[in-house]
Image (tube, rainbow, N blue to C red; front, top):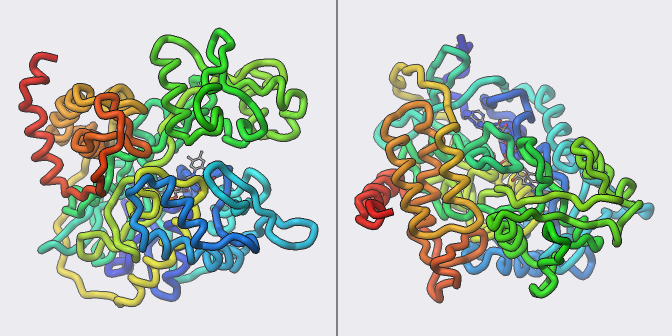
Length: 512
Ligand SMILES: Cc1cc2nc3c(=O)[nH]c(=O)nc-3n(C[C@H](O)[C@H](O)[C@H](O)COP(=O)(O)OP(=O)(O)OC[C@H]3O[C@@H](n4cnc5c(N)ncnc54)[C@H](O)[C@@H]3O)c2cc1C
């Protein structure tokens, strides 16, 4: 039983990562219902972010230089206006987090201690407690929620479907155990995070497969650039899921990549181990797909300082019996960050009336084809606040009664993950994408336990099949170069299913 009395008509926010928490707090004093699948601030990527949050605060840095780095990483597909707007609000976003009690690391002089990350031209990464940035921000915001009487939290509740009437949001179907009920509302903000859970190997919470994207698509909202997944090249290669990251900082301090024979395989590549993430991920993928293994070797460069310089990673390695001072660290590429998602404007509005999307589930245009490291936490804060202001400015609406809910089956990722991992990974090609489509489409159409995750995976496959070029996080072995004329793509579910249907009919598949 879900107690919804007195909550009908309020704005609903789904997801309690940083995007959802900021939006809920910034909606005050307007009442909101914050719905989350696990506990508040749990089962979210936000709490696992170790790197930091980007903001151009150094004296010789500027939002314009931050923008230039972002556009370079985005590989031609950023929306420059949107990106410029978000990055220029970085200083305000940091001040906002401080106002909720977040304490960023500072130097002995009291100024922000700024770190540098790959592809950033300046030192502009803020941290909290060293590598505990995400967990510190998430827990600080989580502690602020009970102090905010306008927020009602419904935890351990799964949002399953958006209800629409005449193209407008009129409710959201919620499920807890064997019970489902519709909360009537005209305004929903989706903040459900990424979809790495679709892959066997991912850094995201395993249960997060893009539920927000699925709900938005089923309700008629357009999706943008779903093919762009960022694969992190160096996850610790253990049977553990989700997989732990061996951060770029280890390569930054001189660790080299070697194969099982000890050969340094990035030596001849421009940038070597610090080449862009997608380049390193493909090199590691190539070694592994030929039956080899890849390792990060920190023995000569970091050696006995490893435990002191990287205590978190050292502890993770120790669980698998690896001592980075003596042993090469086994690594592999993993699905890490989804640049695509629900298409939104600069305020987080989707193409569907009454629906906003913020954080990793949204595609604002900031990241384009590839995310610049540490821009995503910044985006969650800026867009959380913008969406809250936009929604709050509209006031409440009276609602028609939403239809009664049917209990939907629990999601099963079992039939989906092998297809996604095999065909929608680091390297893709037409035959593989068409195979993926032919396997995923029946799962979507049966409306069984695999239908919801299969729908998100199918969208990735269809977008990837249509993008006949390699760009950013999307690499096609049959089209290895970028096309001279490239653009973002928007599609609704109807269009995605139409493309999937025609790809399935293709005679190529019947001979595969
Ligand atoms: C290991 C790791 C390290 C990272 N490091 C960095 C970094 O250093 N800097 C950086 O900028 N970015 C980093 N990122 C990316 C960044 O953490 C995420 O993009 C960002 O935190 C996403 O925030 P979010 O609020 O959109 O989603 P999340 O934090 O993932 O939260 C999603 C929320 O939605 C809930 N939810 C999902 N589906 C449902 C449903 N159907 N019903 C109810 N609730 C639901 C989840 O339980 C969760 O509460 C990292 C990511 C990972 C995984």
